[in-house]
Image 1: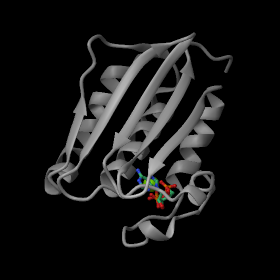
Image 2: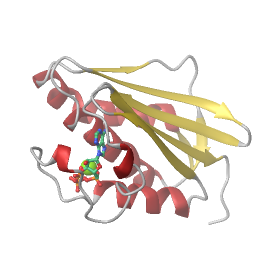
Image 3: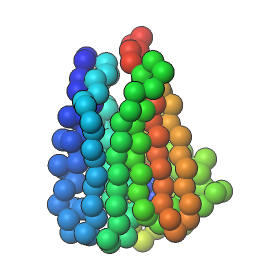
Image 4: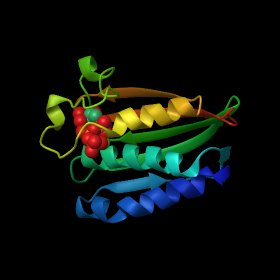
Length: 151
Ligand code: ATP
Ligand code: MG
């Protein structure tokens, strides 16, 4: 299904508006023009909602969550960046595993399911997900999705 990815992101941000406001976290998304993609709208919404949920959950009060979409070779790249607690180097490859939670995040509620689902959906769309993070400074998740998938 052809969908407006930028609008879908704005809808997801609306879902987290009040949680973010409670923590004085600013969510920033400025798209100079809307981006469109062929994808499963419900699945893609789950991906964005989970990345946003994590970004807001693992960012201390007063922080910022920035989202960004840009066109790349044959598709789009979505970036979800936060100024949160960050992820230890040794955990970077493990956080996508089912039920894995880093020690540093145990004070927040969660099952460790979100990112494994995110990865599965991205894979089903023939996309890729990557992660950069610095402990105490923040994390950046990058999702790349091809313009069109053979599903
Ligand atoms: P659930 O998503 O099931 O509610 P969860 O958020 O703990 O629980 P995941 O979303 O799968 O599980 O994330 C796995 C782990 O990766 C988290 O427990 C946390 O340790 C780490 N993590 C994920 N996103 C971030 C982030 N933005 N900043 C810091 N750590 C993160
Ligand atoms: Mg989560």
